[in-house]
Image 1 (cartoon, one colour):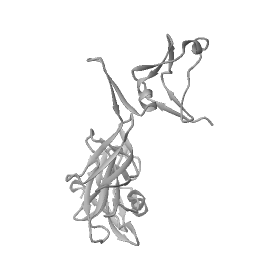
Image 2 (image 1 turned 180 degrees about the horizontal axis):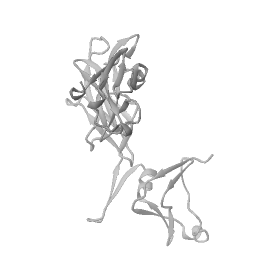
Image 3 (image 1 turned 135 degrees about the horizontal axis):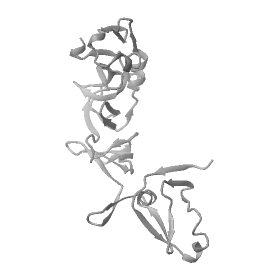
Image 4 (image 1 turned 180 degrees about the vertical axis):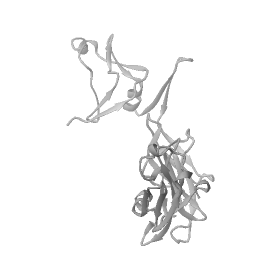
Length: 281
């Protein structure tokens, strides 16, 4: 099966080719392959006066460059897509990676005092509101603090998603149980006939009166669920994960939180605790 990738359409750049080789087939579709994989764009490459015209974004993808065009100044900028993503406050730890046309950074590497290692995942970069964050905490009980890297994948109205990657002082990655999976195992919810919402987390039940909910009954889409807000962070020397509990499309009624404990070489998720916001108590 032929592999394809779809890229955004932008300004065109050109590649000079032998005109005689393409004149006879100029009307035929032009296909682009990179490392054996076909790269597809919404605007196909075109053959014009002995040159193949490529969408600007495609050229950047093919040549591993960040290419942009300023219509006002009529300047074409070509920049290296690989570089510094973030560094700690003291500067002794930093992250490098490669930026994609979507704005996300991957191929991440973590550097510390002349040593570097892979940093799994992807993140928003230095030009965003949520670049990678660094935190130090002794999570594993060693003689030195561990390093927690917080990578943000997306944010917006009712949405915030990040992930945590933890390393010990020797830049050895510490396995971490997935917070959302752990929460789902411990979370139950239902709506009683009188409209009361029942939230169960970690074996503890909480009732929220139906008249406190702003979302109309017809728009509640069943029982409350874990929404698209999940944040890892370090609090009082502990790694925690917090998710919003949501009713309908946009109403958040409280937080579901877990705290991590290091055991048997793994940072394990603890008991989920639900805390309703004050207006729902």
